[in-house]
Amino acid sequence: MDAVVKTLTPKEKSETTQRPAREEVEAAVRTLIAWTGDDPGREGLIDTPRRVTKAFEELYAGYGKDPSTILERQFSDVEGYQDMVLVREIPFHSHCEHHMLPFFGKAHIAYYPTDGVVGLSKLARLVDAFAARLQTQEAMTAQITNALEDELGARGVAVMIEAEHMCMSMRGVQKSGASTMTSRFTGIFHDDPAEREKFLSLVRAA
Image 1: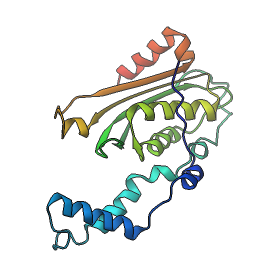
Image 2: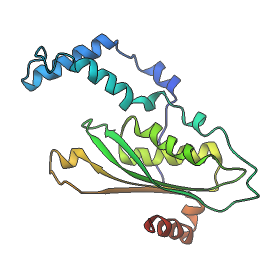
Image 3: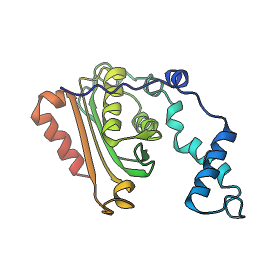
């Protein structure tokens, strides 16, 4: 049985998490700098806490993005098109929730529309919304799939993500270049092996 991955909306996040003040965040960064053995008061580091805080606002902006809003506009005037829609090689970068180190790669997304389609850029925006959070690749794969299934009512969704994880390349086993692949299939893609193979063949063609 597939695991259920609940995605909190920005409103639910704000209700369950007390966000620290900017001054507290900058103080925490200064503490981390001092813990490394460096001097947070030296010239090259004195503005680092402010810069890191600003960078975090960009890197984790996904917590403020609602997938249902991204996918809310659909186009039904597509001449009755009901075949696969596939967007390959959507680049992304994220941060693992275990070490807060980057992982990056490409996402491949396909779905079979029911009543309409969404703009192709919306699929890329959906990837960005989930990538710009503390993540695991497995959870991110499931979240993208769930959002497309829930919001579009698609007859089938296929998501494949391939990525390199810096927590594996820079530390621990230090295996640079190792690639992790995750995938999830629902509806037509789950039930029909031929449809899965069609998706995989089109992705490999890239």
